[in-house]
Image 1 (spheres, rainbow, N blue to C red):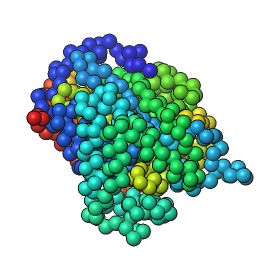
Image 2 (cartoon, rainbow, N blue to C red; image 1 turned 45 degrees about the vertical axis):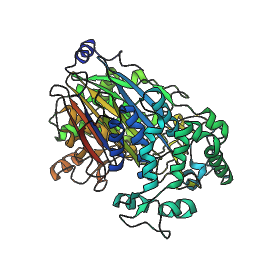
Image 3 (cartoon, helix red, strand yellow; image 1 turned 180 degrees about the vertical axis):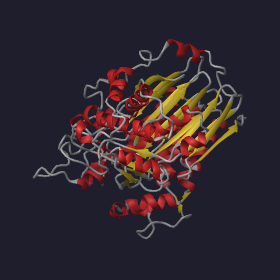
Image 4 (cartoon, rainbow, N blue to C red; image 1 turned 30 degrees about the horizontal axis):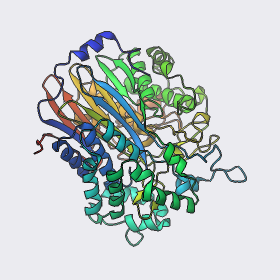
Length: 563
């Protein structure tokens, strides 16, 4: 959908009369989940590239240094802002697709029972990768530099190696047993079949060669030739169902982002197959119609939780790949629909999710990566990338360095049951050939005449609520460091509970919410890894922040002009 239907003309005029069409000469801001990727993006900007070239460098490098979060074997979403008097926004859908031989009951055995192991681990769990096609698309359609130039930092990182961090060990521990089952994954990412120590170097020369093949031949360097043949050969030999026709058919899709007005801002966010933009429209526009409440108060928190509950139910019942199922997007993102959600909120009582009706269930892996950046011309990118669970399907194709995703589990692999993380869903997100699984990845921007905010995070089903809370911090005028660091809370309809990060609620707020009928429980110390950049147009100042929960880095620097 386009934003014009719900975007007031006066706000469009405000944006077109923006104080500055671009940041001060030479300023650039980058925030990624790893310092090596942040430096890669800056390096490409310094070489004369634009934000889209830098996005290629950041995405490819994150796939090297965060093998637990993204990579050439996965996919993702890129939200682009093309600078101008009236900026143009484009959403690049590089979500993985189900192979042509996939079907609704792919993971059921002869007795009709879903086999969870093959839906999570090994080549049958893998959808057709989209990130390689996206990198080529960005370079050819939007970038200034050759693809080979933008991929150079990732190639260097793969050859030189990166140091193991505590985060690597934490996420590797979650998937250790599965990683140990695949000899190539164990060889590359474990040491003596156990987790490597902090500081140990992980080198990936085979992945460097795959990146070189792409640098030389573009799309064909991955989806055909020696790399493509090797991928298919191993996948098929190990029980997977990929075919050359799947590689040939894969396409990056340019979509119109979800756009809606809020206060003096426009919110620009992810459309289907992401549920994120639709959910943000429901919560943010719905809250605006409720009685004003002090930020952080019992009433404010109760409102947000109740609206989260309702939009996550809509996600479960109505949302899927709009190329395959009919979804009433215009209605779900309209102010009128948001008002109807808000009108069903009882200010004095939590609505049990069971009262809203119980659909069937599925869930979504929670490890992903995100980066945000702005170049000196005012172009910007928010990108969220994933291979689903940490280290994806825990299966690496020998000779390529490519770790396969397990994004097939983001479909309702069992439309009659639940999977790994308990997120509700059903038939609209059932497996079908060529279909893209529903996602919560929510790269988002907020723009007004005076500012631009670019943000996003990994975190599976909690991505939407994290981006929501970060957006509310931005709208309240808080500094960018507060967007990425604030304690978080989440409700996803099922299971029927508020999940809170340690420190999110004090005892008084906790008890008051439980008195309203909410069930509150801990989600652990830290979750998410938000990356955000900010452009204050009035002061012509850039800022950037990386989530302190992760190992990423963010910074603003003056562009070094290439010779």
